[in-house]
Image 1: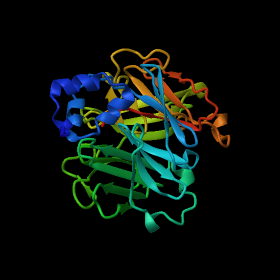
Image 2: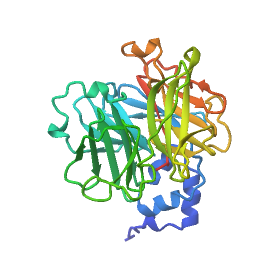
Image 3: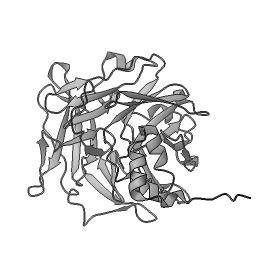
Amino acid sequence: MSRSVRYDWSKLCTDLLRSILENLNTKDFHRARTVCSSWYSVSTTCKRPLHPWRILFRKSSTLLLDPEQDETLETEHPGIDFSTSCVMASCSNWLLMIDFRINLYLLNVFTCERIDLPSMGSLVLGNASFYNNASSSSTSACIWINERTWDYVVAWSYKGHYLFSYNKGDDAWCSLEGARCRSLAYKDDKLYVYTSEDYVKILDLSGDSLKEIVEGNPYRNHRFNFVLQRGEHVWRKKVAITNSGEVLIVLSVRGLQEKRLFYIFKMNVESGDWERVDSLGGEILMFGYGVTVRSPIREIDGEGIRSGSICFIDYDLWPAAEYFRPNRQIVCGVFDLATSRITWPKTEDASVLKSFWFVPGYA
């Protein structure tokens, strides 16, 4: 009588596993790397391109658009109505979502795995306008997830006054009132808060409560200041952290002749002054997501994605007339910092409700 043989697939030869993973299509690759910690570790050594994708939302399904491969992946999401949900932030293959009942959850765009976050309870209930403002300037959010250990951190603010954070394993949300938060970014257990007074605070998220870092914050006493030219108006102000850990302040501006622009500033550590820069140092900025990522090796044809690009959503720009049209389709754009040119990737599917950027594999 033959006996079945069980194999421990987590102990496959590293070189063999790497070869298998590198030859998978994108969707299967990102599913396979979640099998176990050893597969995930090997996947991080695979030579896969790192660049922004677009996710297009239909009512109960998504289209994932890889601009480099000109590939579209359709995924069904049973039980989720994207017409009543908003994207608040993204990290790697995960989106932070909120529905009209103020339920927050993490959604993996490749595996469809969903992680429900604790109820907000009385923290925001009773505020009927909250959901309608979830994607507006009154709300800022960021997430980080370790796809090897499944540890994650979620932080978001509402109307600048309330700041909430949640670490995997916590019993409930940690809240802070009077935060005066305009924008958020996360890196290495630290939450960077750009305040309504134009200062950058750093909060330590490694403990049981939100604690401000004073001694180790070189930006704390250096207020961001920028003199607008005549005819210029600021629409959005966001904070972002580069791969090397530098803090950037990014402005969405309406310039002369209604031209819509982005300006980037970095603090001179010697003088403490915020200075405008015209380069991202070989990286791409995800506006509103609080991060920069290394740029593609070459320009992605037709999408405008290259070194020095800023990927944004149309409501990040000074509003045009169609901005106020009800039930309009939300679209993605790319701003070229060197030429100030905007490229609008095509979205010809009328069933698409909205689109957003995400960067597979980046965390």
